[in-house]
Image (cartoon, rainbow, N blue to C red; front, top):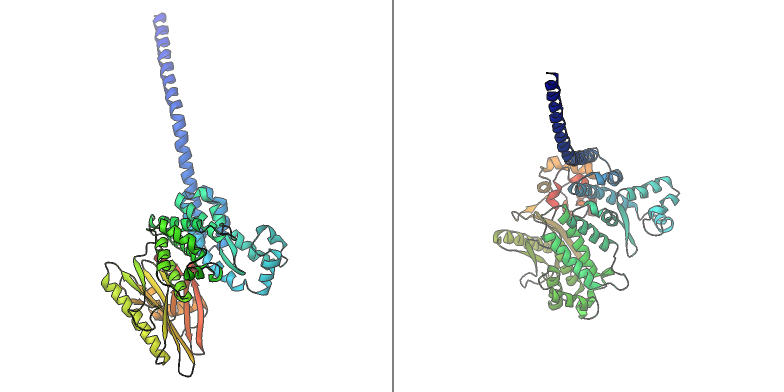
Length: 472
């Protein structure tokens, strides 16, 4: 009996040991998988925490320097799309910092610090040498906020520091990283200033076309559009317009290299523009530069084309109209309004003959077409007169827009908002245009024929209008 009990116990122990070994084996097999799942869950939770912290930080009214420092410390804790959204929020916030600093950078105190203490550009390592504590803090805030100072010839301009953003490339998607690094390449002109490789710049402009056309409208494509504008200027305008003469004389650089590159890339938009400039009989600097600037403003993939000339009307040779495929009613509505504006400006001068009209497309995307139209001439006594008007069209309807239409608020409600934002009184609705850092206002004044100017930077604009409206 006792022997049977011992045998039963032994059998039970053997069965238990076998089951335990099996369970341990299964657990050991599960362990790596569980560890991986736990690590992924922890990483996801950390990303959610970092992104949530950033959103709260933005909502609290953090400035560029504060956002920049947060990004430096936390960009490795978020997903690639969230990292890009952080840069988007930062660049929008930049509009205010850029506006504020560009207003004072020319003052002797700041210019002396820039030229002497910082040796002409914003060098972070030299900032501690600035004696004035307030000025030192302001320049340090630029660096902290991913801002830099670019010299165009001798002119200092505060801009987003794309070199610093490009350095974070591994945290972005491939297209976003490429955009940031092409921005850096153009901003810091990494093409050899003494002997630029025009074919390389051309190839980069073609790549910008591809990136823009391959992505949906977003912050990314908005920045690519700005990149393309800079590339076109580097190719065709040059320092102080020095390249324009080559396209008039049909000789020298960059004309020869670019015509060759355009012939090799006939299907590209930059290639088509160069061939038009080569074959279009442009003999006037103003008309040539106007055509280039309009091409830049429209950018790759814009749904309308700019058509120059007023169907043989005298004085209309430098006025741009639009051609919109498949939308004849909208096209006619816009072109009729352009023509009426030109006629009204000409009539306002009170001059019989010799009036010249000119238009400039200053902003264009799928929502808005922004133009500046002017007329000028001299009377029989030689007195010169000039008149100008800003005009904006809704690209969905072709109708003209005023500032109330843009903000979708009645003027009675909008007026105090604009006056509060700008600190300027407005007797009537201002003309406006969509600029690089925000909505720029031309304010009429009974005290001056020239009126006044103000800008509502994008960080304030987005409180009223979704920023996506301005992406292109």
